[in-house]
Amino acid sequence: MKKATAPSCISCGKKDLSKDEVGINLKLIGRDIQNFYCLDCLASVFEVSVQDILDKIEEFKEEGCTLFL
Image 1 (cartoon, rainbow, N blue to C red):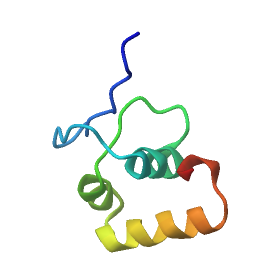
Image 2: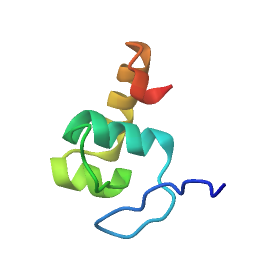
Image 3: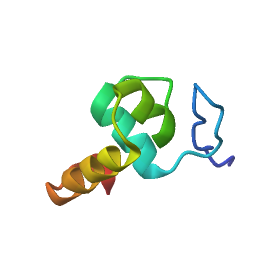
Image 4: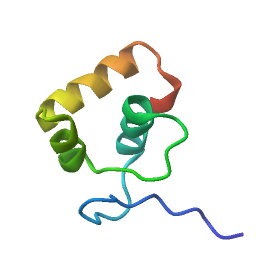
């Protein structure tokens, strides 16, 4: 059986996005999305810093969000 590959960034083309990158896209954009952004591009889309995104990921993890298990 072929292993599923991690998505790539729709903006810059970065390959193999991490589970956290995929999770934060699903959390902030919506669970039915097909296109994902890397942390740098996602921060640009939302006009925040990458550190702001990382802080939100940690916050969601602490809350027990299942997207970040």
